Image 1 (cartoon, helix red, strand yellow):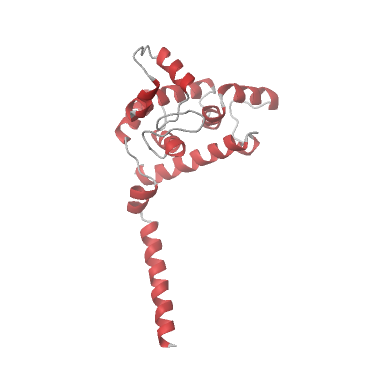
Image 2 (cartoon, rainbow, N blue to C red):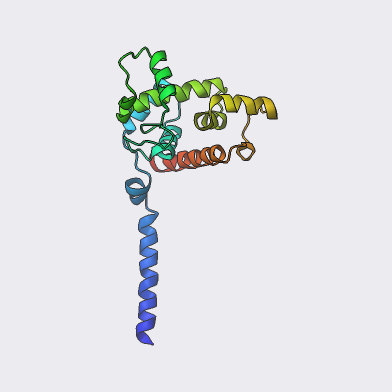
Length: 186
């Protein structure tokens, strides 16, 4: 009986200790919410008047900061840009040397992705929810939803986004933004 009690006390102590480590900022930053390329993210966030923690949440949601991430649909890089979008951004930036696999370079992906996200955010009157929905579900779809459902530029009812994937994406990015801000915004 004494050994069972000791075992239970030991297990409880281990759970408490494990939880304390897991929820520590150190563990969260190192294993759950790393922030590589932070300098680059902050530089382009400032250049395009974007919240760096929103960008961190977006990148984390898109690729978990994996430089060579590729989606089954063809998106590439840490900001997961599609070929046509990346080519269009290269045109806008007058970058005639750009090749799609350049997005494997985090600096290029962040440069292109932040420029594109800033243009989307501007198009939707700086509304984060609409901009994130457009980044994931397409600008045309968001414009159609705005027209069809009478959404205005102050739209914030994420639960009304008709695409499950886009709705869940917006929720995840905003939750990740909040966590990045808590961990790195001090």
